[in-house]
Length: 202
Image (cartoon, rainbow, N blue to C red; front, side, top):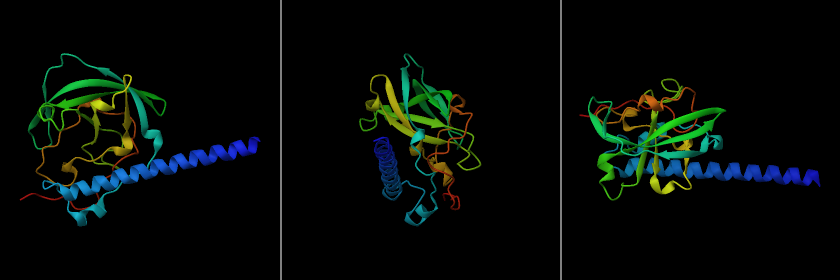
């Protein structure tokens, strides 16, 4: 009986790993197609072969406790081209990753908050120990939604971390991740360094 239970457990774990990997594969395929659909995109269809990702790893999918912030002032988040964009701090998220307690900050864009389509959008920019080695030196982003908050928790999946457009081309106003979201550990999940040649907008 123990042997059967163990085999069933292994089968269940393997099925979960496979289905999760399939979910991430579908997410990444949709991500690639968005480059083709976006007129402002720095990448064309032939460039997509140069996108690289870590293998899907469910240990980087976390349930984070969320602490909503009140009366936060709008501030200027610097961008890589020297300009800035208006944001405000929306919440702190707390979770444990690789036995380390981590706190990060979620932001809301003022301009997007005034757009009915993106009014629920939350922005999670971050840097980590893989930057300039395996991932883009300027950090990566994760998109979340206020509707994903359930019982004071929100799921953060680093497998969905992606590069800003500035990783592929000059000429974009990509926000610089604030220091409070600089993680002192490697996040080996999500998008890696782009292997194609960086473009220069005319």
